[in-house]
Amino acid sequence: MQLTRLKKLQQQGRDLLDRGLDRHIRLGVTGLSGAGKTALITSLIDQLSHSAAYPQRLPRWSLAAQRRIVDVKFAAQPDWSIARFDYEGALHALRTDPPKWPESTTGLSELRLELTIARDGGWKQAAWPTQKLVIDLFDYPGEWLLDLPLLDMTFKDWSAAQLKLLNEPSREPTAKAWLKTTASLTDHATTTDLDAVLRAASAGYRDLLKRLRYDVGVFWSQPGRMLLPGSLEGAPILDFFPWAGRFNDDSSTITQALEQRFERYKTEVVTPFYRDYFCRFNRQIVLVDILGAMQRGPVAFADLQLALHALLPVFHYGRNSWWQRLWRPRIERVAFVATKADSLTLSQQRTVLEWLQALVGSAVAEVDSAVHQLQQVVAAVKATEYGHLADGREVLRGSIDGTQRAFHVDYLPAIGTELDAPIALPKLDPPHANEPGPVPHLRIDQLLEFLLGDLA
Image (cartoon, rainbow, N blue to C red; front, side, top):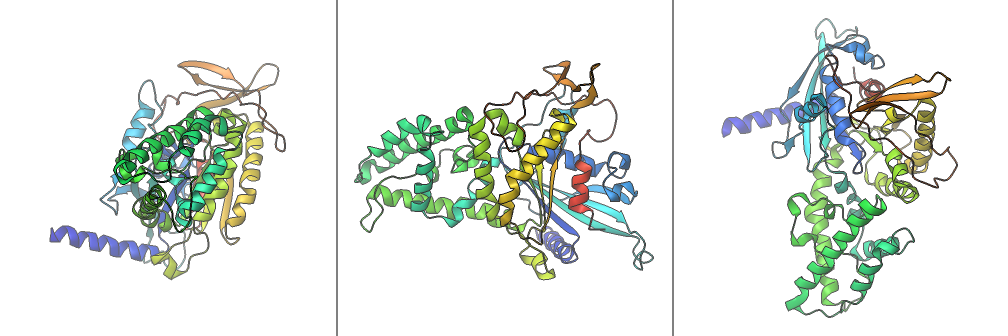
């Protein structure tokens, strides 16, 4: 026991030193459910872990292109109380025959990599020819991200905001029955039947959120743990919902009970999640699922921008002093990334990049102007090949439902026009592993250059 504690203290000391010397990256991959976080993290780990042996696969990452990656190894993660990211399981899914996409995230996980990098000249090279870079990557369900803005809200404010959303034309037809049921609840529920009242109305609200998410296609639903509760499945702390009743000094029993559960949810669920993980990132990837939103239709596309505007102010952006690196790091580099670029031709990728810039343009006003930013369109795992038909038209070739096909996304709205119908996006199979080395990708090397290129 004492030996284990000593090793943990030694590791914490090394982590502090690495952070102080700017040799420790805590990379948060942020994105709503379905944006492709697990696939992207798997690809990042795969590219990094193969970068010493296959530098030619990362031509636009300067450290790899200059053959300065000496070694990459997996290291013991700092927090033994959470699961290790299942990189091997995700990679096995991609490498099996037929290949499969990795399963979506259902809980919190992390993984640590240690890179040994050759110095590029300078006075230190003779004494210390190599240096170390520690990278911690984090994965979590996108639904949990939705709850972070609750930290700055009262139950009354949250109820008003949610009820306003539920009465909007895109949501009201689905929410109408639940709104009518909760409006009929008595303001004076007795203590004996209060729990039953809360359980029933909360169960209805959870069902409503799921139907809005999966049938209507909206992104913005709170609390996110109702969509994917994890270990909180069936816990009374989730038995609350937006309240249209009275808020005053003589609040009813049901109002007080809902307020109490809302505040405990913030204190016991949301605050630890933010404090222990999100407020310690110093670099960030924000996945923006533009194509997935367009595939769901105009309602989802409009809701995606709403979610971006609500979430970005939660994070701490800015430059880091030596002291801040140690104890209260800020996010000093943020990459806004649109995924699934391999579903589009080159000209269509440029259109999506324009949409990305437009969508995040006003939202990034919340980001410190001193923070380095990138907007890019990538494919974590490239599943298509680009080509032309005999008549010169652009075309993509990939596997769809086990059959190799040539295809082209016919409808993609130009920037500045309204999305008036869902786009038809093919569901691609992962590529077959025909050669050794990391999985094929599109522009992950550019992403690595932005995130890590300044550190050695």
